[in-house]
Image 1 (cartoon, rainbow, N blue to C red):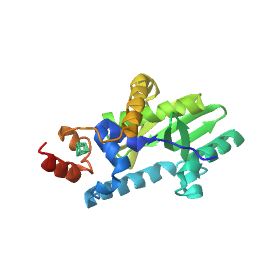
Image 2 (image 1 turned 90 degrees about the vertical axis):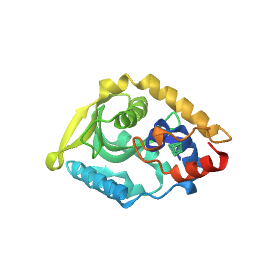
Image 3 (image 1 turned 90 degrees about the horizontal axis):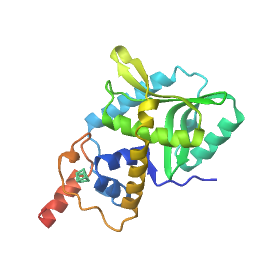
Image 4 (image 1 turned 180 degrees about the vertical axis):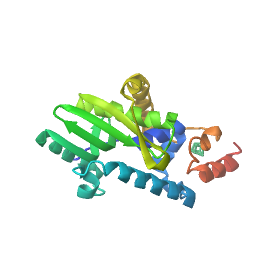
Length: 223
Ligand code: SF4
């Protein structure tokens, strides 16, 4: 069975930055400006750091190796692996709840308990990371039920790992997460893009990929 979804952790975080960006990402993806070399370099460093952490779980099964780009198959494959194994570690395990699909960096099952690790290249716990984690916690909690620890792994000097269990803090954000999921679904169901003018959100926390499009639109309509 294939899992359908409307939102992912990246589109959720996009919506937190700007609801118009969320809409454009779905309906006008060709208007994005490609990432520059500095951003691409950061993505690559992030992937390297993630691989370093995952190497601590040599028995881990990587779903992205097994399934590649067949994202809709990740949840059912994850479910099968978790049902058939008492102890198992999965990389990129797919879970769906509330029309939201997430792929967890590391999901470790031990008996009936689960520990999750989300790996970030950052040295600090930004609000964007907390939103990303809060959404993932929302889905994991609903699907897996018995979560022992929900960890973010940050980078310290010499690529050392700073692992922090955020479970209690994320629990406190759950009402806001649910409210945002509902709001973002209604934005995606709308017939036109939300009339949001450019502002500080265009550069914070990330430089928006739709800046050129919004600048052109603002010029056309005198906004
Ligand atoms: S450029 Fe600014 S207003 Fe336009 S979609 Fe991006 S964040 Fe939103």
